[in-house]
Image (cartoon, rainbow, N blue to C red; front, side, top):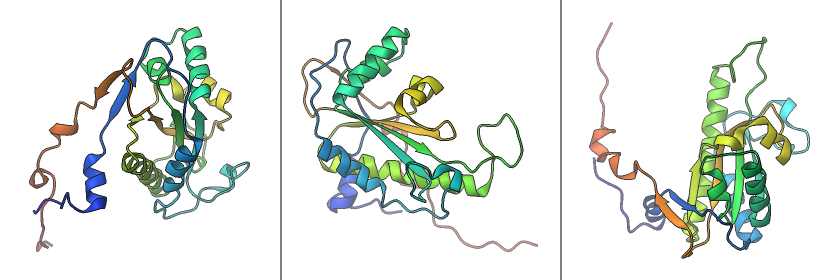
Length: 218
């Protein structure tokens, strides 16, 4: 298969997107641009979705899309850092919050289970499509940030998916964190920059895609 054309503006942005973690033990000055963050979140709204979310999820935020975004500006990130440190969180999350210009908690909205069970969500086609749609929304946000030259990181969340953090941020318990999206300052001399580990290990296109033909079988 032929590789994509990096000269195409859209494909250039896709290829330029990369994981960038910025870490600091002491908090940086809490500066940020809310208009930029809102533009990044707006891009999420254009993701495709195949099914409306369940009515139970449509209270304060009433859209039918199967995802929700909860944004924290830089001062709120620093306050959350302080609270996690007070709770003796030893992960890298407080170091990320010390540098972030914004954090966007992106959740997806599973359909309520049909019967009580201990699973996080029912393994249904509807839920698979909700999760896929929310993932598309996250990718839109990462690309929108990249196109604006904003370093970004899609974290699985760690402590940010815990019930006490959900309660602090006013996130309903029935939602599931899909990603904690960190946006960082473009340049800083006092924070450590750490790239993603897997970017160069994905292999060439022919190692994960091929043209296929129909087979004859009974």
